[in-house]
Length: 347
Image (cartoon, rainbow, N blue to C red):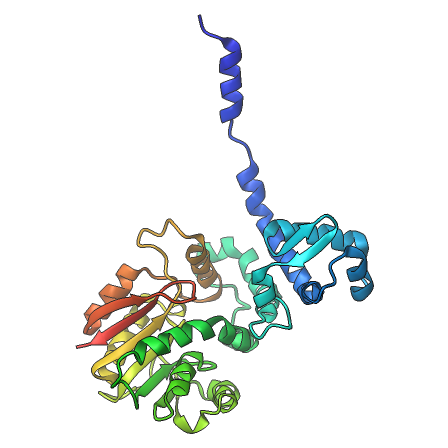
């Protein structure tokens, strides 16, 4: 005889609830919580030993109630530790969210909580309909946006750039390199190569404004300005020359371009490299079926919201495009970055 109580109990335990929807909607709140903590400089103060709500309220001028609620959320999110009413800074917060750290990324948080990014995301349905970003996303606004991100993006890529440099210089005879850094920005990837070998020469291909305001500043700061020269122009049109470089670099450039522009760029880079030259690509790469890691898929949505044809591309796509361009060997290099680095060799 069937047990109605058992059936009812089973039905209740398997009933679908709305929590996935609620948690996703409140994901926006999580980013706002993080941005508020950065604005209030809480991570720095907690890292310096100001561990109680009362001491933080006095230091920041905030309400004790507001801080308690905010820090409880931060603790659950993993950015703080909590012991009773005392808080401690987590390792990731100590490294990236305290102003006392050389790897501080607070400005990156602030920019991504700004009106431009949030505004583009909140118009996402219309962007999906049209396939184009909102009208307020212009070349001028994008220049201002990236100008704010130069320093935090440099910090984000610095450790991976060191790994790339050690990999490229791994062979004892691989010195005195001629390097092409395309759309270099701060030049974080080529700077690592220049610092490793004083005889390495770097040519930066970027807009004249970026070169003058950004790249030259970073090259001077790192003491390698004499190793740098510059080629001003649009990366879609610049002639990189033929058989001139040992290494070419595309550091987080491909996701801002469409398929045809990337394929064309790979062909022009291949032409610019000497025999046995290498192309280094740093990117955010989803799995081949675009169904596993969430971040590359959300970053693709970000490209939809803020560019005319950008996307994130799979390793299969990169391998095919590189082979089509004439590269014969494509390998990945594990590094402290969102995805492995790609290193392709010209035959």
